[in-house]
Length: 377
Image 1 (cartoon, rainbow, N blue to C red):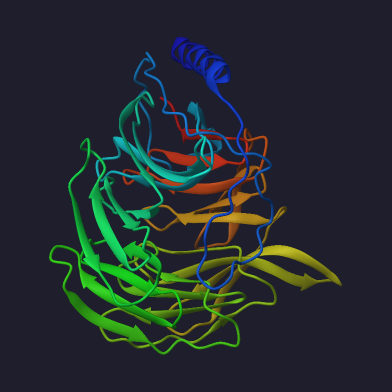
Image 2: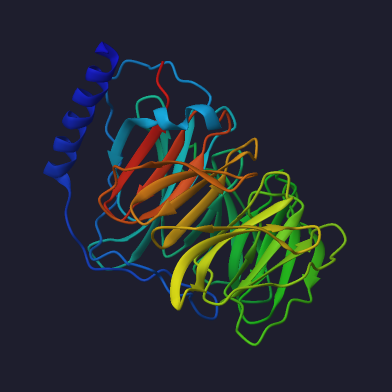
């Protein structure tokens, strides 16, 4: 009981400190390749990214997040950070990498990667790139994929080191997106003007493979790796398609009635979860569809109470975390049953990330808060 009091006292002190230093700046629209899918809700203001200050906290003993105990999840830590685009964990679950997008006083677009100590949310390192775009962080929790300002070259940057060492590759095309495979074998670079992806070797940045074949009536919105090293995911409006990285074989199309607002693959690549809207009883309701990636059929359709902006499976693949509006829902992936609904955010949740040890869920939203959810001993 004393441990919980200490955690909440720490939280109140931290929020008060950030309120003294925060400031507002104009909204920035993230760049997109071709076109952007509709956003359920967009931030009303922007703030300069604030590095988390050092916090004195009593380390808490936590439990594995499993179906029988998800009702015990609670907010154990929080910190104020604006406009988070992505959350990544280090393999040992000790460090969080936050990708943020903001503007500086001169209205320049600034992407940053802030590495936080997961135990007390103190800042370990900050990498900032003015004019360049950080698109993702690798599974090592520190290597950032960066599209350079010329949009025809990309770099891999070690954000854990001041003025981090980088490796770059120049292309002969405009780059739309860059992602890194979960096994850190490949760097997938999407062309902005063509439905094509080039795979580069992560270590040498030599070209390895060319992937294409995806085609719909709509321009491609996105293509890249998503939690599974087996598949590349293509996304255009209401359509998803998977492509095997090694063979280039394309799956069946995963078609939806409305725009896909979020999607994620299970760690083993066997299930694709996608969020959209579906007509039910003459009404359009938010749903999450679980697909069998082997044959392209629907496994389950989960009716969600609010629009969904983020999804992620647990590392063991048994749980699915769903950002349902401002609520965090945990579902049983196999049975399709809602296990618990957790409240705390005051605005839409936009990012979710399970820690590799499955002891923590990180969530970030338009309320400019990062929450860590844990089951405390």
